[in-house]
Length: 479
Image 1 (tube, rainbow, N blue to C red):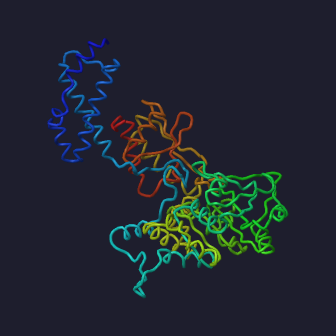
Image 2 (image 1 turned 180 degrees about the vertical axis):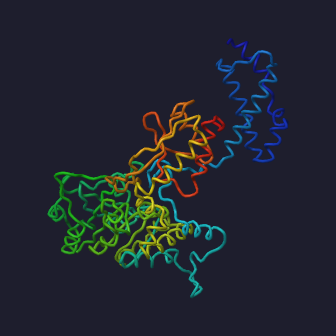
Image 3 (image 1 turned 135 degrees about the horizontal axis):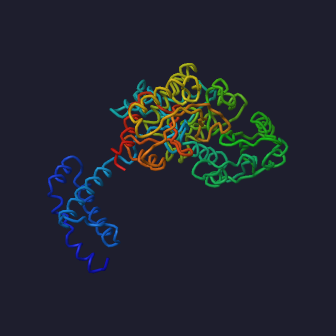
């Protein structure tokens, strides 16, 4: 198309004001903010110009160009405005089978935790008020007593995530001094954050000892100098080294620390308050065990194996925790009332571990056996076949789920999935369309099928999943 041709067509694109006065757009502006509608109309006009100029837009025969382009602008602006009016943080149905899916928000909170957040959001609370004395209190009070009771530690503190917990502990106890850690424990966590980088940010100086696969107690002893302030043990919760290996245990490190009058810190990462072996999972050191081993400071996450909100939990000896509470950084990384309320509700379930296994969704999903998931998979497959059997083939497959969240990397979770093999579109296109539905649906692509792992299908989500999938397969969802 020549410059003259597309310039001529530009004249048929209606002015923005004219489109805003169309009944469909006026009606839309009554439902969503007018600013979004105006922006959508302008964006629709820009896209039409780009498509005309590039030759990608062909005007149909038998219709006036002005009428066609006006209708296009109205339709495109409507779709854009509705899309832009949706929240950016949206509900997702997780059918990946990854229980602690970092990209999907990690731990699903319990009913009690959600109720506690709603209560905290719906009115005022005694976040920093001691109701007995009427004086200012501590926002950590609602959870500190629970944490010390559950772990056996002398004191506790909660910040916004475990990286912040490690940063605060190192900055308080070892700023300007040396921290000794095994070379095999210099882990990288999500988002490419690494222990050496966190340590550098804290002001502490890293001293590596041992080898990647073996570090002995004498490696730590030989590295201690007058500049040493802390011995650090990092649990490799997101990977395993197997074969010819030797790791110095927390108890062995504590013995060295006592001999040299040095505190010992243990970063558990995905800390657990329950014996994972009881869930038929690989054994993880519990927070209680590490505290009993004598670690002076223990850090772990709230939204991984604990199954609570995002938080970095610090427990340990009162003298060290008191120093951290006075560090100005504590205010910068402190938790809000929603984290306090959700964490308290989650911790209360752990007062009875049987209750925790029933009520904390993370534990319930991790503990589910394949035979327990079989009725769910069969029912879902039957419902999908009835609703959309003409557009796709549905079958039940045996697969393995994953823990996720950098926890229990060697765990095997036998599971079941409904495999969806669409007829009219590719499986890649099906997955893309499902990401645009409300709620969005995220599954697992494998070969020519979309796998819907029922382990992470939450109660009450089944009918919504069937409705959305049937609509997309029938071509009724916006792509």
